[in-house]
Length: 408
Image (cartoon, rainbow, N blue to C red; front, side, top):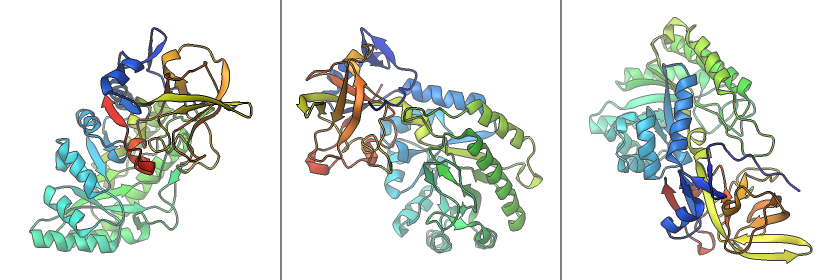
């Protein structure tokens, strides 16, 4: 037996069935027309942002990193909840514009920005988080051709990282950002060239459940920002402090201690060096805002036995839920939170393997999981599916195509 991950709080039960946003899973499938289906809960997103507003200092603003989930309905919900948006491509710029987001609320990070992406962002009034000296100079040249002073911030590759993060974005050699020692000279160059100086972006890592590590990283980011501002000899207009807040996916995972993080950050805000006392501060979160608000629903197509093991074969799989299958950076495969949606309150009766419809042994949604007995036609729910699901999975693999997606 392999334990399942913890099902996030906030989901209901109606007549024994999983309910999302007050509707049963089967009703949602009927409304969408079929499975596989991603369902995203507006109320759970609202609750998460409200929790952040409650515990973080008032002067901390929240950016949504849209790479976590860029569909237009989610962006429109987030537009009502957060202060800004972080994008990482020209395609994502088009997505936020389609959702009606003011480009002035958008910042654009990521290495390898093409000239056409830089030009579109500068023309729209987006802030560019510059990743290299070469990119900065290309942006200045493009701005000059457009007769626009580009809005430029410098992304810093700090000498430290976020301990315990699932994906380290700082410390040592990295394709992301500019080594911290090079920042002052480049900042003076862009200011001297007439660009709009928009401050610094310091992102150290993501998906950390270690609250003490997050607190330490935030303190290090603030200290580094103050030192760099002193070296630049200019006040810092804005500081994107990154994020790193993780969500529990696996058995034994515990959520971050948001009150503790907020209290520590409040103390830091009350003791800022003068050079950054008037800076606008942002944290950048994606998965933490939407990950637990999503559920992936897939129908059991077949139930079979092989060498004494039971397999529930679904119409979904890794082509929509690459991370849940264990093929998105996981070294040792562990089970995501998963349930039989139409028997949500039933006790476990058997040990089963839940697999997808693809002809590869990598297509697994749960190994040796204890679940209620399920039959053909029943619905499987995979939780923590609101981030890095639909857009981070190979939906075109074997011609399967994308899943349906709805917001409730």
